[in-house]
Image (cartoon, rainbow, N blue to C red):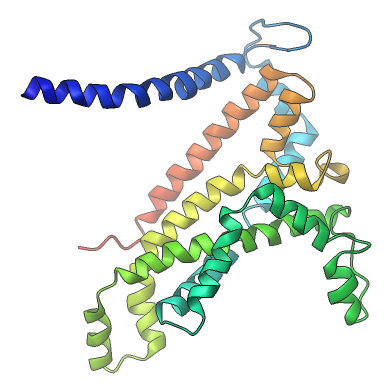
Length: 292
């Protein structure tokens, strides 16, 4: 019986294991090795160059501009996290229309990112967009060139990311709210605690695991921002003003055909993301309430 159980276990595990090996582990291994070569799809070169690729992109001004833009993409996280908590609290307390708003705010997350970007390009269009021609013009304000001005293009992307992520954040927070025992609030009311104190002393500490999860996922996702940049701009924006590191990798790999250089940047960036994630887990011990 035990052998039969092991056999069935292997039968179920083998397909997914092969999938991970063939489509994850092997490609990642090839990419790491390629990062130390001058692999060029056009020239057909594949020679070992050591750390030359790392020295090249670390000395490239475009890379550091992209790195700064990547850090800028972290700005949406506190905004959609705070708004997600507010919407979750409203839904948890059965505010009228909360179910309708819950669906409406969750739709952007499950919708096609291409369709969302096309819609936002229309909304923020300089000549006939809703923001400039309807909202700001009504107050007599000349709207900026949201998609062409290097100062505003990143802000436009940040606004769209906040709008997109509110729904999924509120869902995670709402699920955590539903798991808080009502007896905690009853005890707080008996002790005469105000709603504000109840929120900061009971609700918020018990929400910290969900907040930590949303923060970690948000940081990893924001650091890998790519589709929005590619669809909002054709070349990373004027003066490379909207390009991120992920866009830089794509450009080197599929525009310049410098696959070795792109692989070295991707490997280096993966190590950075891993380090940031580990630091977040380390710091979480100080503020995330794990319970008894």
